[in-house]
Length: 422
Image 1 (cartoon, one colour):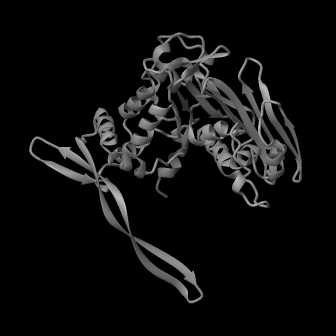
Image 2 (cartoon, one colour):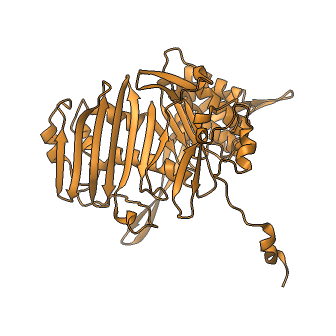
Image 3 (spheres, one colour):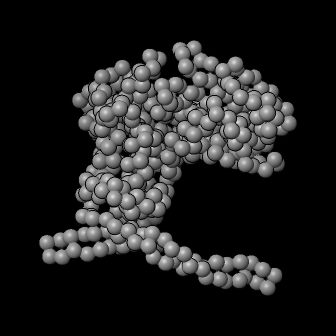
């Protein structure tokens, strides 16, 4: 499970910013909204967190930072030696524009806490570190500093076993040591790499999972049953689900000396079919005949079911896109269902849907507010910092400006000239 994510000097985030999933000592909704870790230093974690804020406040930058850091872990070992890294610092400060961007994941897996992070510049990994908490005192597995493009120093702890020098020599300046070592079959570092790349499902604004995941699940008896139950629970009018294989034409264009060459190929694809019933008839609908909201819910169905089963963390920018407030509430409450084995999936999302600011859904430590100051720097604070009363109307308090993170709209009368005829 994710304990916290830290980022610094990335896009609109200039200073150290931390999104923490550590639960406060408040016992409210403890059995549904939190999960015990078995670790004394961090006894409970939150099952979900929601981030509010106006447009351009930095919410998307936060999600993008997580997605970017995950991508660097997954792909850096495959970069060409001279290939630059996608460096995106805070540009409105002459100091930070030349400093490294920093990212750090802290997570728990098999009751062990891992703290892994790195900092990068366009030409190199500037720093990289891994601390492992198998006891209250952390073990330093490795620390790395990139003093220049071709000068990197390493410090290894005795707990990191394997061919450390081989991995060090093989690690290029623009690649992570973690990624390179795993590519060279490091068994000890594999769990850290796998958690970051496989146990985090991150979706930026305007994106969603491919339909293929849910479609392929619908082709199996067990998968179909779970998907139908999921869609029925969301009350979108789908009574049954099936799939079929159909041929699809693919148009290809190749550029040659004689100009573009157009070819057509054919492939087989599996597509979903949705059954709807009324009092008078029933009919099968194809994907393009369904609403945008239904398509989005179907796309997320299998990934969410899978996350709930195996305990993944799902991060979604603008989860409520094309979804009714009650559907979004339904998705959140799925992550609050207690599990038999004590494990838990997590949902972290941004939204503008203020109807979810409800003490019946979230604890105060699950709600975060993000805003951008006059210096154009994004900051984030939890609702708990405002010490709201337990019976406080959170939606009303937010919309009235009590917690900040609202757009500063100018008086509409100032724009009277825009609607006047010449």
